[in-house]
Length: 250
Ligand SMILES: Nc1ncnc2c1ncn2[C@@H]1O[C@H](COP(=O)(O)OP(=O)(O)O)[C@@H](O)[C@H]1O
Ligand SMILES: [Mg+2]
Picture (spheres, rainbow, N blue to C red):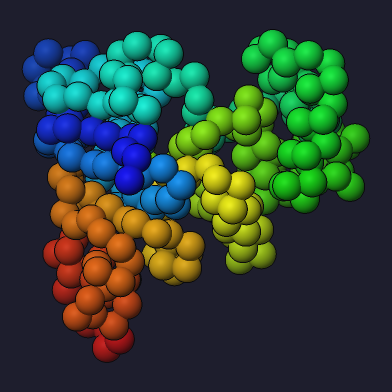
């Protein structure tokens, strides 16, 4: 199968501005492979290195050593990112804009024609179930609706690979379910989705493959079934992998 996202022995050290303090090692030789067409769940507790990995792929953070590539092109070359869409962990949009205006703004950045823009916006508002709210300012949206605008924005250039940093964090169960359904629809359209999460239930429900990172290292990778083998579910397996002894009986 076609590998479209790859990291090899990826190491990232953040230098501390205060020279008395040590640099912080966020990734310790991370090896990852994501294949075309899959939904890939990137799991790990807070501080594991998930956002750092995405920031390397996006060209925001340089690798200290090792390598990362998208579509076989080294991420140090901006062209590697031509076919990706990205949703950051926190989004800041002009809240006085409506969803439609916001998407129009991003379409302009990507140089879409007027006709392409109209068609794309209609498709995206339908995909993220915001047609009814398209002409209302974003500031009146719920957190879930704001997150769905973010997903629509990340899709404006019709990318082949979506990188979503904790797309469901902070959403209520209905909001999470809607995002999950959108991710599933994207897969059905043939897109590859690489997303980070610590919501193990949702990962179990929608992912083809998962990787578990802890303290900057890859602890396990495989299908959900492979990783949960020998445990009650993915959560139990996850807790074991990150070395947590629970006193609750599963
Ligand atoms: N800009 C930074 N400078 C110094 N340390 C950082 C920086 N960004 C992240 N870190 C540290 O790197 C580690 C990994 O962080 P991060 O990639 O954000 O983890 P995750 O997204 O899995 O929660 C954490 O220990 C975090 O404190
Ligand atoms: Mg993060």
